[in-house]
Length: 514
Image 1 (cartoon, rainbow, N blue to C red):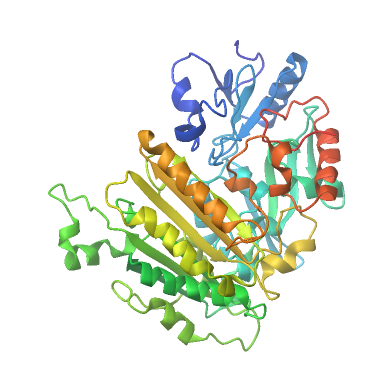
Image 2: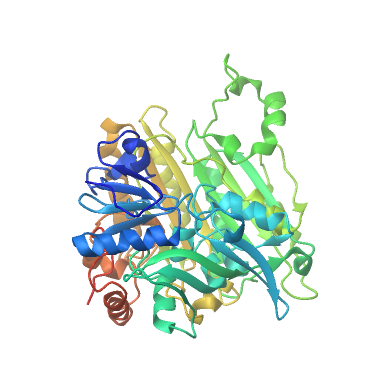
């Protein structure tokens, strides 16, 4: 494919030097062939005008455009196949005018581009003693993150990243640049925030409300590390179940439990323990001074004062940290420092292909249904064997209850799904290439036991756009991602108006146009 005249940014046609490295995304290891992650042309636009030129070219040529900021989408939905085009915005909007702090009517805002990663954005806010809820992976970029919600550690106490957005700026299907707000186009604003990421226009910037440390003084955080043991895991998940089954649990608390197979780069989760680990466990460090980490459990727990007079229940923290490695303390820190503490510092959990699964549930009977014991057994089946050539990265987090901001924000003009969620469960199985069937069989057993009328976890199959898995035809499995037919049909109408010629339909993981 030829390059496009009038585009000033770098262009890489298929077959050109550096094309292979430019097309690489998180999902390439697992879905490159199956989901056809092979664009005919990759463009690094240098401006909105470049984006408009690419859109007009695609429209005239009757081809489509895929939009990438971080390229972290699990199924490769931010890629495409030839003859279509890939727009890569990772470096497009990183100038001094692409991030600006301002105050209006006593509220602090940041106008930011989509080209920043979470680590960059978190540091920008932290340097100014500001914070906002967001996810944990430093290499995730803001474009996909905001359109899929921005699920993260502060979900119960502050809601989603995208809940804080007040306006978005896009280049539309005609190549026109416009700002979209609830006042200017309620339906398009609603659909962009949660509906069909990358399929409604090219998002370039957005404005987001942020919080000040000084308004939440006394916030507490706990990072605890445990060597893996099924009894310990069951105990920690029981605490999570108590929280999720209790509709009245205070909204001040957030809690997340992660399980990691051996060989995970644990210092990416706990950079602060390297020195102490060397002193207390020198046996983990080989002759090359590179540590080999054992199977482990990582827990993040947080409390934040949301109203005058709020007091933490310190016994809750003490129950969690009991028996932890190093006995790390509960620390009083500003929220901007805690949000940095929750970041995961590596690009991916294991340098292997994967079979992933993220599910959410609205169950308030996980305790009675025996889910904690059941899921502990499922995890142990993979984590315990030393040489099965499969590695797990699992994460379980509470989001529900009537005091949860995640729940309370459900009618805020966004379309993020499953606002009645109580728990989000991610169970990712990485594997050596020749052991894919083992990973798939394990995931099939998980799904059969956890979802359905007699499921331990959820009566319905509920998935998230950022953690999609399975069928790559979104229209065929729309009920897994959206609550009802009425919502899906509403999104289809917006899609048709925003993308009448299919220029923003680069693959099958898109809401079908009406």
